[in-house]
Image (cartoon, rainbow, N blue to C red; front, top):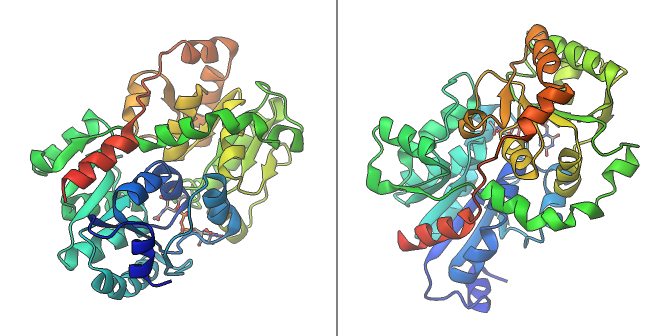
Amino acid sequence: MTDAALQEARGAVGRPRLLTFLGTRPEITKLSPILPLLDERAAHTVVHSGQHYSYEMDAQFFEELGLRAPDHSLAVGSASHGEQTARMLSRLEPLLLDLLPDAVLVQGDTNSTLAGALCAAKLGIPVVHLEAGARSFDRLMPEEINRIVVDHVSSLLLAADDVAGANLRQEGCAADRIRIVGSTAIDAVLQVRDRLDGSTVLQRFGLTPGAYLAVTAHRAKSTAPDVLPGLLGALGDIAARQPLVWPVHPRTRAAMREQQLVMPASILVTEPLGYLDTLRLVRDARALLTDSGGLQEEAAVLGTPTLILRDETEWAYLVAAGAHKLIGNTPQSVRDGAARWLTAEGLAAIRATPIPVTPGAARRAVDATLASL
Ligand code: UD1
């Protein structure tokens, strides 16, 4: 079916025309509460960059979240940042020129977010950025560069919280472009929370609720040759004392291969897990150790104490509230953080902290987006 015929079939003719551009696992989950609302209220086209393409990093998430298939896929695959972003730009541009949407919606901080925003902005198409204003203040993170560029070419900045809003104003973004809508990661977890008991992940890996730790680490900083060997060593030591399970991201696996590292035998390793298995694993863990941005918020909704394997975080409100602890990624800091917080008293103190979690971001984001067109 052609795009026009598809839009007609959806009863979308005469409505605002919105194009959502996404490409990776976190964008799929964080946009999942929004996509059906946009299908209802706009002539909505979904374009997938193809940055993530493995079943377990991509299609599985569409299936589990009950999302319709994207209308177009650019199939860019993996490459260096420059090459990957360039492929997205050159493949998206003709599509945008053909469809001429009223606005393009992007989420987060990935190379797909950057390419979608840049391509639209250079064609004079307004960009709506969901999760605007999140900052780690670490410009060595590729994601930090992406966020800054995207925010500064966007027309509407949908920020998760007041801190993000203040970051944007600090950088000179006009206040009338900023809306504080909350975080859709929270809505995404809430919409599947009742289904988590159906996950068989604990049985499959022989895990007892409350008696294991969950770990993820995949960021460029964690997988760098001066960090990854020490991180593996420290996590291996922790795993020698209590069960520790790690669904390993393809980037981490590739880095281990390149650096000729082997996973300590004490760590229980799995392939990347789907959304429901991941959330169940995190929900029932004694604690989560992670460098992921998305998982920090997901763990907060699920009430799981979280030690962040970084020195900074975009989700500072969770650290400020005392719900999450920044423990760094050096062998000494990880060992010290574990010794301090992975005790009955340490975990009880974290669990006793009220977690600031506000639902409803998806509807507020959609309302603000449509009102801007
Ligand atoms: C990207 C995002 C990061 C996000 C993460 C979530 C950027 C700069 N970073 O990082 O913010 O937290 O997604 O997962 O956009 N690979 C596969 N199968 C896939 C996709 C990737 O095997 O479906 C492997 C490839 O070897 C690839 C590597 O993973 O080179 C890294 O993938 P890439 O998309 O470049 O970055 P991520 O580390 O996933």
